[in-house]
Every structure is written in C-alpha cells, then in structure tokens.
Image 1 (cartoon, rainbow, N blue to C red):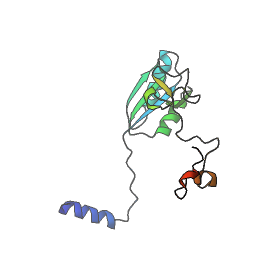
Image 2: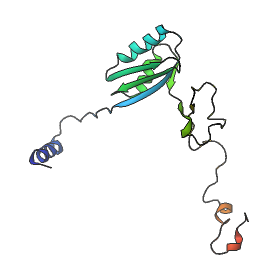
Image 3: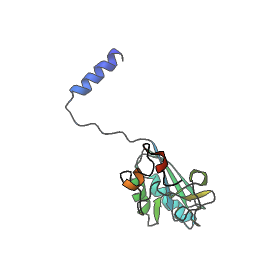
Image 4: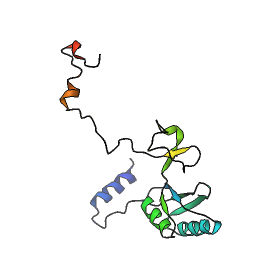
Length: 152
C-alpha cells in the first residue's frame, strides 16, 4: 500500500459522513417468462431494458427464457417482469449433467427444455432424517467391539 492508499484508508476510517452505498455487483438473472408471440417478447424486452443498471436483455421465446445482465438485483428484475402481466419466475432448470438423479420425481419435468431438468434442493425438507445423536445409529459401528456391526 502506497502513501496515497494509506491516506485514503485513514480518511475513510475518520469520516463520519453518510454511510457508503454498497455497489451492486454485475449479475446475470435468468427468468422463465410465459411469452406466446413477438408482441409479448417485445413488451418484456422493453420493460426490462428500461430498468436502471441493465446492460443487455436476451430472449429465447422457444424456451421461454429471458436473460438479463447488468448491475441489477434478481428480485427487482422478477418484479418488473411480473409487472408486464406475464407469468414469470426465476429460471427453475439446471443442465441435465449437473443432477445426480435426473429422473427422480422432483427433478424430471416434461415441460423442461431439452437437456435440462428441474432444480431440486440438495437436502429435502420433508421426510425422516437420521440424526447423528440418535443412539441406534451411533452404536451401529463400535470401535470397542468390532463384532458389534449390525449390518454384517
């Protein structure tokens, strides 16, 4: 750190002015928006392009996918897309090869574009889960008694 950097750092530490605004990060937001015709496509594109911080809007009508890049927040982009009157949601699909079980009931979706499956949570929120402190699972394998393995 040079002298200029040191002075800048000290002046930032000493300033009691207004709190600094966080800079928005450059992000890519993918949405699934229901579009039937070219008019719908243009309406969505014009609405999203008018947002501040948007650098580009790409639309794939066949997949019903809208990709917005720029200094924007995903929830604001989604809200603006919904303001057009179209059904919109965050892109719910991931590439087929990123899912360990693509034909599981939660992941397989007939409406998904080719090569994609529905995004599923890594850890399901429902069902029974074996806890580590459950005595039946803790004592199943014992270092003290190697013959205590209940699976063998």
